[in-house]
Image 1 (spheres, rainbow, N blue to C red):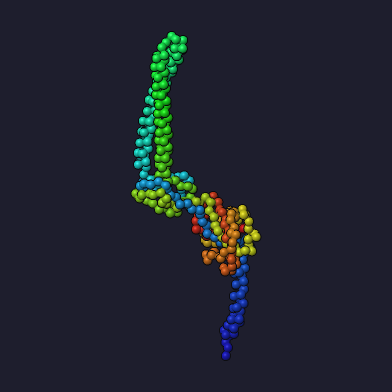
Image 2: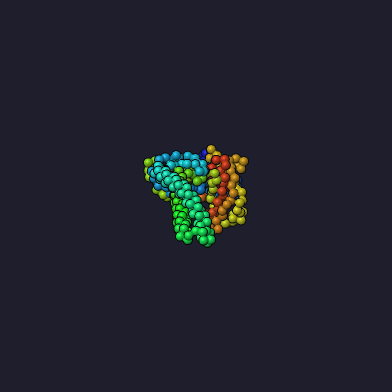
Length: 313
């Protein structure tokens, strides 16, 4: 015999599937509202990275930045021992001083030889005129001619010596510039403003040309790659503005007046590819999709490498 409680259970069982259907419709409808037609895709923020190395060789005396610390462009972030190069520089400077002193002495000697040659030429010209008039012996003219040639030869040799010393001085100047360039390379500088992602060297180690010191991520401008199915490509174009939406502290999404930053579409893939496993699209995961890149100026500093975001039109 059915009790009153049994009579109530039967209608409830019949109503349960209908209630679940209504609940599912509400959930789906709510999801559609949160991911409206302007939703383009989910992405992870990435930064352009730079591997910082040096062409200098020597002991590392200082590493001035650690992982996670900010750097600015052209900032010195590591120093290699410059003492051997500085000693070579001092040696070259000393050699240049000697060469310059020799050049100065040779110039003075050259001036004296030029004066002697000029005097010998005047005397030869005077005696030559007298010989032609028969007032002086030819032997005297010949002797003066020999002396004139000798003085002119010594003057020419002195001029060649000065030219050779100047060439040597120029070579020393080139060597000095090379040493100074190598000294500058001992001061490792950041090529970009950003954050140190990885540090590879410590003080006391030996640096070799080409070995990396740091990996630096440029954080003034970041990018996010997202994937869209083929039907959505028509709605995208180069330099198109998009909205990058971030999670709030409680994990929810704010509307466009909340935590959003502007971005620009800078690259659209020309070939389709399979949807990556870590990216959700609005189409089936087995469909082919196209990769799109949005470049994001990080003027506010809200974006970080590895931060999950959503891209909206």
